[in-house]
Image 1 (tube, rainbow, N blue to C red):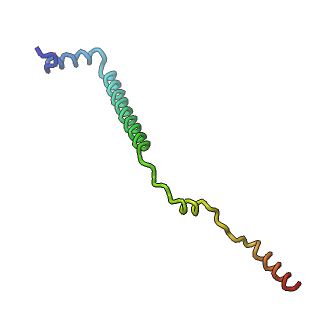
Image 2 (image 1 turned 90 degrees about the vertical axis):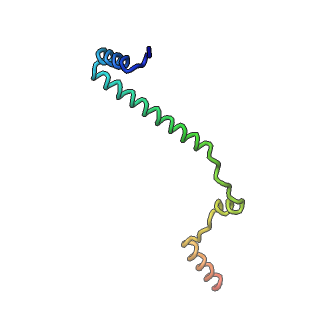
Image 3 (image 1 turned 180 degrees about the vertical axis):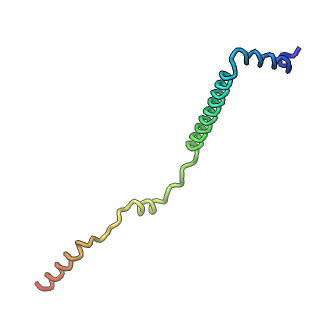
Amino acid sequence: MDLFSPRHLIVILLIVLVVFGTKKLKTIGADLGGAIRGFKTAMNESQAAADAVNEPAPPAQAPAAAAAAAAPRQVASSASVPADAAKASQQAAG
């Protein structure tokens, strides 16, 4: 005799239905579905994190380009222009 024949499965399902009731079975099914969804989400997040760790690093910049990018830029201030003009006029006068 086959243990999982359709008649045996129907009898088992009826016994489970009588023992737990329809509301409890609905709650158990919803909880089981939520647990499976949570497990799949965690597996996907874990796989994404592992893929991010295993990705190759971006290529390094050439030393000249890195130095140019890191060098501070000199900006002429508007306050120094009148002072230079005043010094130039004093030197010309004096």
